[in-house]
Image (tube, rainbow, N blue to C red):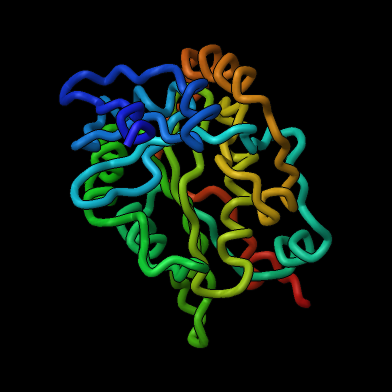
Length: 252
């Protein structure tokens, strides 16, 4: 009971968060609990390295993770197999073409040791609002079907504040689809001014792309600086990259 009483309740319309240092030291990163997923609370949380992890019975649980896994664009690593795919596979990667479909697909991805998804309807609604305000973006990978028609095959979405992109979730309906989207998105974002991609947790999948661990205090310092810097250009809707064999005359 004592442990539960130490977890702050985040009052409605008050978007301040307690310093995550206590949560990281004593509560496995649980910073607080709220009854809402308001856009103001989401933006305030991300600026401090905090994010909503899941909900239970109408309550939303906000976490920080340390050390933090991040990708610096110049350290992006593309493995030999993926590099070959990027050179010789017909694909198209787009941005913000179908955000709602991407987050819905992410919600349906089976996850080990989980009975359901943390991306419940309330999360989808909240991030769709962020998307409409220009703070959440999706990247889509399109691959040709048997008739040569391009179909949505994978992708991911995340939150962007200033020069930081906070990755949230990805999905793949076909092999390599989410990898293709991510590999093309990082340099695209870098060209716009994004200097840091937050991967949240240290996973083997992100380590293959060159993720590194960052001390949480250093991560927060970087966020304070980078969140305040504007992008060179806004992230809009369009084509990020493509390698269509019929266009370039390349054969496997």
